[in-house]
Length: 51
Image (cartoon, rainbow, N blue to C red; front, side):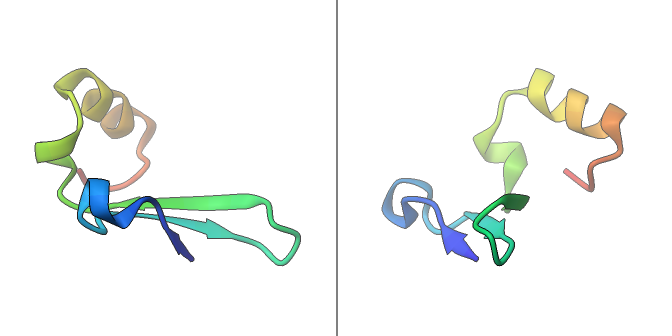
């Protein structure tokens, strides 16, 4: 897991990579305060997790 620019996002976004360095997951905390509503709506429709 690699925190993305923790200063800019207060450590709220992490990237998960497999052993080959391929991105396999993104974790974003407190998304309601960080992302626009239309992005969150797409995430909900895709069933990509709780927002």
